[in-house]
Image (cartoon, rainbow, N blue to C red):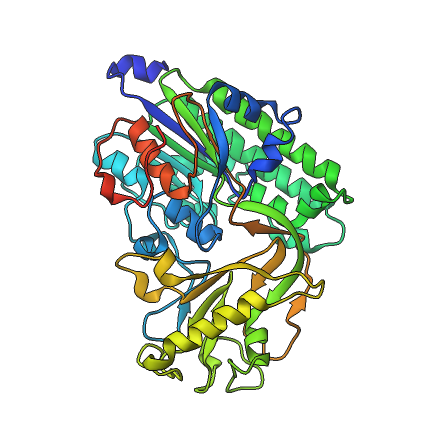
Length: 447
């Protein structure tokens, strides 16, 4: 036990959760000789592949992982959501998450949480011990609470996120250098506050892994130019996981998890252009810039990643599909998506999920009507730019996957079988000996 735990003498168990955004389980499990610290957790505890959520996008995944609930309860479906009853869209932030986070439950039980760099947590909550908001935060000055946290992080040149624009360059060396600097500073910060030893739940996320995967994953998977640099970056992440594990007191259980998997990207699929070509989407202007530019004969439109909305009468302001035609239009769209082939002749979509299958809760009224889960190699885009190419390539060569999500629990008593993101919050609460109702979550404890 750490000094603080000895002084307080309560003996309550504690948990340290370290997120590795977008890290596929296969990368770690198939290269144990390269990543010995992940292998050690698997050997001493439990590890396995789990499923992500529908849709497997970070902005939706982290609210679900940290609440144990599906987007119908969290109210967050992706990086961009739409206002109910309008064509207005917004980028969901921390206050848009409508379900209790795991650290809220910890604090409500009179225990303390330190939360660092979790996506979709801006602005930082002031009812936790300390918090540094993650992805989507405008800058460190407004992302850290209390002020002494910000002051300390500034001494580290702490970065909330890598600069993704550097990944768009043909020469990735500057991007790789920035990724190392970002993860270095975040590790120093995590280590510092872990050693404070004044928390019951430490919850920190390395998002830089996701950024590196987006721009270098195909290099790793298909022996590209930057494969060695990719491996070296992940060896550093593995080393940092090992150091954090070694610094934890005996009363702490460590969990390491990703929010989705990753695979190589061959084609971006611009679905609003596809819908336009299929005669299902039209724009009222020659140069559309947003959803509000669609015309009143549109039958469907799309948001990333692979979310489809029927332009329904009575729900959308210019709805063109009568309610009695909803099922037929949706069924046909689903069939067309399932039949769609890419330039290489491969099927674009692995499966299409209807909203009733994936979303339940007080906020399912803004749920997409269909969600397409892509086959490997296809990244599902939307955009409102009028005429263009359905299939294209861009600077990214890696994309999210629903499967191959990682979970490591440093406890031999855990069982990872048919698990998904929803199981992580109840598992943390069980490890902390905190009571909850079994029916509160879409998942179940793995211990």
